[in-house]
Length: 270
Image (cartoon, rainbow, N blue to C red):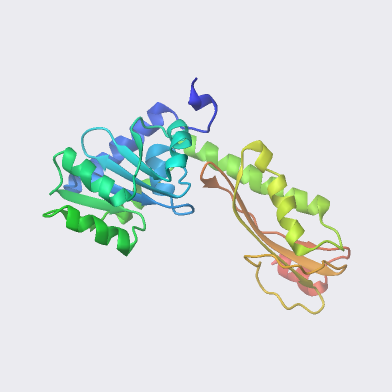
């Protein structure tokens, strides 16, 4: 079965373009391999090179020459990772992913080489890695990597448009379904219900309500409360849904059950 038909994935040509661009910068910096670290919510670099959205922890070895290897945690996450990833060599990281990474680099014959680290590799992970690779040199390659990612391909822009569409759908659903008497926590179901069934995923849904004539909230809240929404409230939002790691973002206020006050209308017009 062709899993490319079951999960969002960029074309082989797109990944070839990315690999060539990344390796050109690696060659300039004299890096033998990149060690790319990712966790949920901080996995864009891993996904950029593998198509895999990290579900717990993942470490990618991306060599200057040869095929990349992706180590994932946990073992029960491995079957799905192999279906989603665009690379062939996807493995369980074992009891400790850093041990597996060090062993893989030594097997490649580059255990004492120069490595670029990409992503927010925690200190305790790094402290596990470097003693296992005596003579290796590690340097932060993340800024160079981010520079490459700033330039979006047409395929990436298409994914971004999907993320923007899902974000718009969420706001349209709020406009349609929010009413006095609801609890704030119910807003999340409205937002996510607008796009989850279409293949979208949640990046953020920050929302808060407060009386327009006596406000006590100035920004959308990261977590919704049990507050009962009342007529005359304002609902302020920051919504960002994504399509396979590519989000849109939209901020909209809503006057609930009554026209906006003069102050809120003036702020909106500005």
